[in-house]
Each structure stands twice: as C-alpha cells, then as structure tokens.
Image (cartoon, rainbow, N blue to C red; front, side):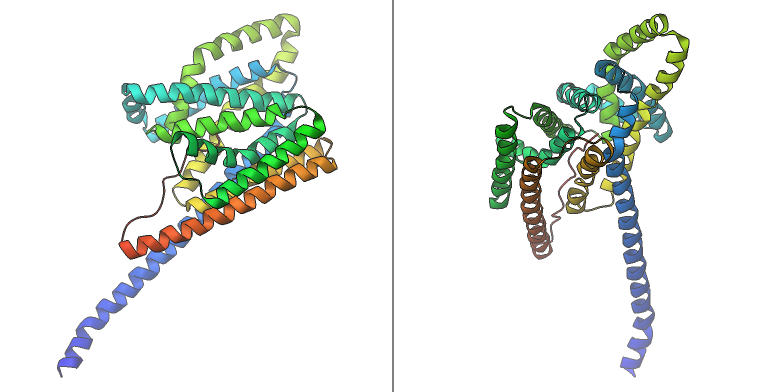
Length: 341
C-alpha cells in the first residue's frame, strides 16, 4: 500500500522531470544549430570578402581603410543604439587600462586591415589566405611568450611543421612572404590584446574605429574632393556608394560571430575558423587565376598538416578538461578569444 501511494505521488514528478530534460535538450540542440549557422555565415563572409575589396581595388588601400573606419563607426553606432549598449562603451571608456589595451589593439587591427586590403588590390589573395591559415599557430606562440601558457606537444609539433612550410616557400621565392606573416602577426597581436581587454566584440570594435575616426575622416574628405576634381561626379557616384558598404562588410560578420560564440563550444569555433582562408584560397586559384605551383602545394600542405595536428591536440585537451570538470564539478569551458574582425 505504501509503495503504491509513493509511486502514485512520484510518477507525475518523474514525468515532469523527463519532459523538462527533453525540453532543455531540444533548446540546447536548437541553440547549437543556430550557432553553427551564425558561425558559418561569419566565416563564409570573411572568406568571400576579397570579392568586395576587388571591386574597389582601384582606390588606394589607405583610402579604402579610411572608408572602412568611417562607415564602420556609423553602422556600429546604429547597432549599439538598437542594442542599447552605450553604457558598456561608457564603462570601457572610463577604464584607463582598458583604453590603453584598446589603443594597442587599434594599431594592430588597422595594420591587419591595411595589409589585407593591399594584398587584395595587388592580386595576392593567396598570401592573404596563407596569413590567416598561419594565424592560429602564431597565436599559440604569442600566448606562450606573453601569457606564459604552457605549450603542449601537439602545439609545438604544429608550429614546427608550419615553420617548415613557410621556410620552403621562402627559399623557393628567395624572399620572405612578408605580407602573409604581417597579417598573421598583426592579427595575432590583436587577438592577444583583445583577450586582455574586458569588453564585448561590438563595443570594442566601436572604440577602436572611433580612435581611428579623426584620421579616417580627413582622408575620406580629401579623397572626395580629389576625386570630384580629377575624375568628375560620374566616377564619384560609381565608386563611393561601394566604399560606403565597407561598414556593413566589416560589422555584419562580427555580429554573426558574436552570436555563434554565445552558442557554440570553443572547439567547434576553432574548426570553423579554417572556412575563411579556405574560401580565399579557392578564390585566388579558381577565380583570380593566381599561380599555385608545386611549391605552394608543399607549403600549404605543411600548413594544413600543422593545423590538423593542432586541431586534434586541441580536441583531445578539450575532452580531458570536460572529463575533469565532471569529476570535480567545475566549469571547464574557456572564454572565447577575440575574433577575426
């Protein structure tokens, strides 16, 4: 009799717990699926971004960079107003340490953007792709040097194999692929600094572009007056609407990435980051007819092998941390680092 009463009392509770667990699992699945779509959109956008910058390749890279800064500020101001994020900007602006870090990241991201724009305008999309393939490995090296993070065996092997690939290309070309390395280094430094700055991606980019705004406005105004006098209003009307889109091209993938970062595991984001440079490589070879020789194949082969070693090691370390977290009851998820903006 007692057992019957207990079963009658507890059965509805068990059913409620089961329904609640199923709903939580369903919500988690939908969130992860949405995160994957957001992440793919962000990295595909970055991968096909050279197609936009090819349209304005006749404009000096510094002028394109200036337009990117000015129109990014305008677009991001609208987004922040919609999200009511002015308080976060105010909080970041009042912190001297945060502003000093963001001043450094501003220089790094400006150098990265300029190198990327220059690579596209001078038909070196392949080097841009190489730079972004190298970036994750260079980021690991920077974290080891400046953040004193321990280098795992797989990470050390990956960096060594990537170094062989770059060395092969350097010996064959008889010059260092400085454009690819400068893009990887500038973005690696940018990611390192943004990891130290306690500010969200959109707010951080708003501050960075705002710091560049005065110089950007001067260059944009000068270019507008120069083009109007030299080329006439027709050329002005053909080019400048395209340049105004630079703000959207810059900010939209960042918003998609921020949405993905809130929903996906760090390892999933790590694998997605190779979508962008892969698209750039395909564009360089298939659309823009850039030469892809046997030496290029060896170089990229070494980079891909290095990334495979790095990814397998990262996935294994992640599983070990998750196992340890279940045993200790602590959260093993690491915060997402700053991303390619």
